[in-house]
Amino acid sequence: MATINSNYSKLGAGYLFPEIGRRVRKFLADNPGVQVMKLGIGNTTEPLTPTIIQGLHAGVDKLADVATYTGYADDSSGETNMKEALRHFYQQYDVSIDLSEIFVSDGAKPDSGNIQSIFGIDNVVAVQDPAYPVYVDTNVIAGRTGQFDPATGQYQGIVYMPCTEENGFFPALPDKKVDLIYICSPNNPTGAVATKEQLHVWVDYARAHRSVLIFDAAYTAFIKDENLPRSIYQIDGADECAIEINSFSKIAGFTGVRLGWTIVPQNLVIEGVGQGIVNSLWARRQNTFFNGASNIVQAGGIAALSDAGRSECQGLADYYMKNAHVIKAGLQALGYTCYGGDNAPYVWLKTPDGLSSWAFFDRLLQAAHVVGTPGAGFGPSGEGYLRLSAFGHRENIQKAVESIRINL
Ligand SMILES: *Cc1c(COP(=O)(O)O)cnc(C)c1O
Image (tube, rainbow, N blue to C red; front, side, top):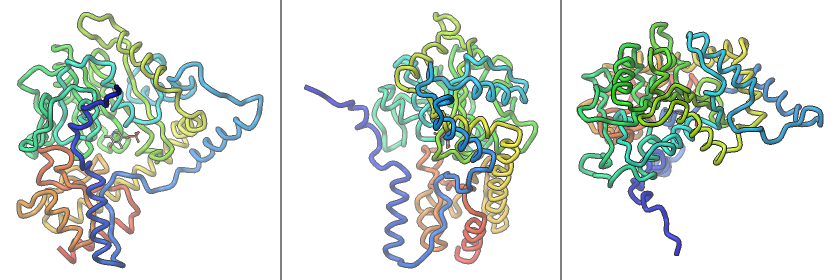
């Protein structure tokens, strides 16, 4: 008799974005012809840059000739010139990475979801609250949690680390020992960016407790402040305790193209297990479940990391960050309290009048025809906030801010 993985039944039925979609569709059905401005989902809108298009085209052309055709790679971790380009990328931050530590993938979401599978089921998981839902949900599915408690908005067994106005949206150390710690900086959804000093506290904690940090760096390319860290490995000792996950999605517009990477240091230490073991477990996991990122897409990724590609991608980042400024400055001028948006493409808007996230979502939709993402969907500490995404066309962003000014 076959059975199913009953952990799936612990997951909340209504995932955040389907519920947003349902409410928007209902609004449009009730208000035919009205145009809504979507600042909800963090999805790129601007076209790939010329250098990347050229790289992708060259990748296709290689497959048309028997002399340059390639099929499966020898192993799933990525083409050597792709890894060389990533090693070079880290060198600009004085971070030295060995090619054996780089695992090219089809994106940061799969990697941040799959990484938990190489760790024991008894690890205590800690997440920032609010957080990107993948970290929690994949640990629920793996069986590392108890049931969801609707009263607290939390799964039993997960340690939620509140990120609030009071702590600058970066968590304090937990008062109990935790083993797997997910940190995302620049943060989705709050737009907060951890300083070197803040990350140092966590690296020291992880080394002292033999915990592992899983550092999601998907938005580092949007950092403008020169003093803020772009990689966890800019912190001394992080190579002993941290895995870093990154992506071409947001910075190069690869959300639909699919390319990311994960760094698993050879120096990563696990109590009672030798150095290098985590690295070889991840290699084993990827070689078992994954046949490598697309060769065409890797050609695009290498182009994105070339000097010309990087300067064009900087242009994309500047465009979205200008949008973030339009949102943040526009709403602040109207008296709203806003966080994030300076070094991250998300503005974390405090709801006015003590409204709940969903109540303010509805008011914004009904009165201003603007769609945001209710902060409560990212965890209990997101209650009372709304995330506005800077991914969008400028005209649409400007219209949204103007509509809030006129209608709210
Ligand atoms: C968008 C995003 C990613 C990127 O995922 P891909 O699978 O590479 O598209 C990763 N982490 C966070 C927090 C994100 O918001």
